[in-house]
Length: 87
Image (cartoon, rainbow, N blue to C red; front, side, top):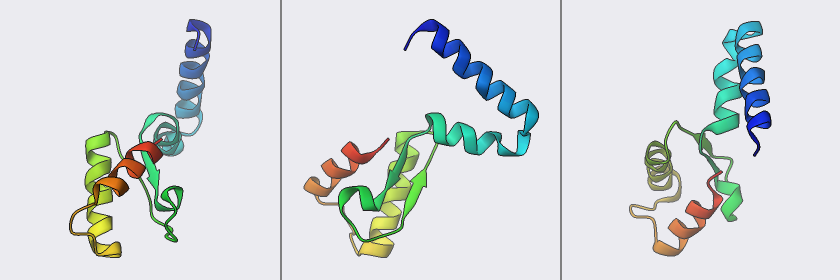
């Protein structure tokens, strides 16, 4: 990424915030926050999550795995798939 493209990206975020402040969080979340989808690791599940940090995202994923998939602990092979699927 060049300096010019970074400047354009920041300008776009600022423009989106000024013109649509209620939508700014969703633009920011899609753009720079880590996210995960169960289907990205081959699960037939509609779970999607994002968070401001990878640690917070992993907490959400762990809670979901325990509640929806009965995984009290995430097996190492599944954990590797999760880490690779985080965008």
